Length: 218
Image 1 (cartoon, rainbow, N blue to C red):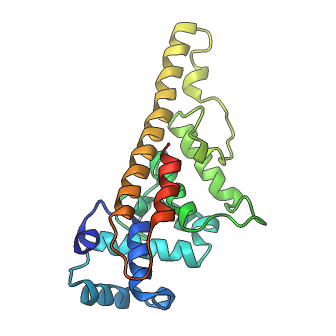
Image 2 (cartoon, rainbow, N blue to C red):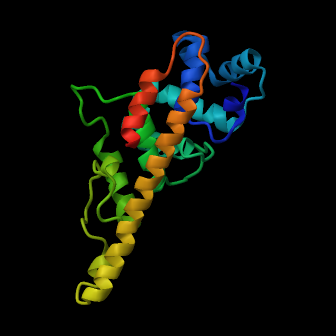
Image 3 (cartoon, rainbow, N blue to C red):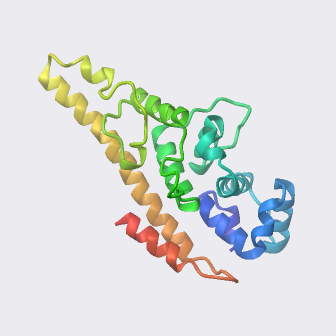
């Protein structure tokens, strides 16, 4: 399990699973410095900052509503889950691919309450819509269809409305962006399932999680 804590490729939800297996719910109340110290002593590793950032973000998703209600946190958390560095003091906008994966992993950690089927604020949904518009994504992946958008067709498309050949070419290009994101989500979901299946837990197993991820991948 040492490699899981030091590898940049380990997903945040995998780290959260390992953490809860060893330290239980009590560990969710620890501050980041204590968390890092306990992990390093328990697993005999030097915890990387990237792994600590992912774990802290996942703990916040599990224990607070910051990912769903606070736009700056939503953006930062998506960046971290997408393997970026946590920089709360710097403006680092999350792109469509980072948002798609951030939401995917967050909803596995904390599924929506049946009494609150749309957990995201309109401000966050508007940000997602603005990102889709800026990237020229006309028909976004299903996970991003929560976006609130001012334009359903990008300006790039409307610029060529009088030129059918160019219109189709630009449309195909932008449709390819959606397929690229879908391919990334499928790849990451498959890798996440493999990482979960490889965990050697002391107090449980990940069979149900792995089965769910395989179904999502299919």
